[in-house]
Length: 103
Image (cartoon, rainbow, N blue to C red; front, side, top):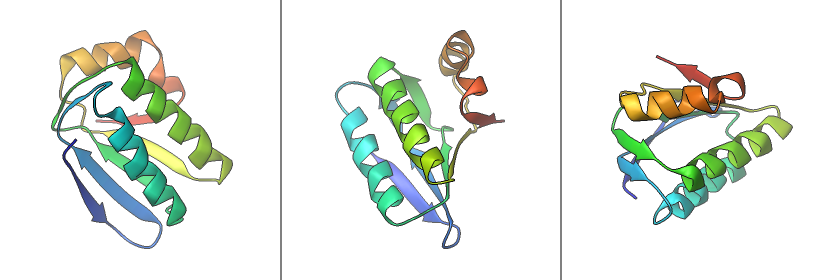
């Protein structure tokens, strides 16, 4: 899966995945997130402006990473969700009650 990483400062980083997050590439996203976790970023922002869809394997990776980051007093934020499909899925599973989702 293609993604861009922008380091804001020593505690914050933005990851911008592109395309679909599904079974075929969600492990790539997990690996990228764990790499950032090991670098001790406290605030990881996922910019979903170029993500078209996400399936249950992708959602599972997000939830596991959120839990791991939270245990280290970190925070996962998802922002710029453009896809109505993803917005509806997040609402349906009440993801906004677990992970901060910003417009």
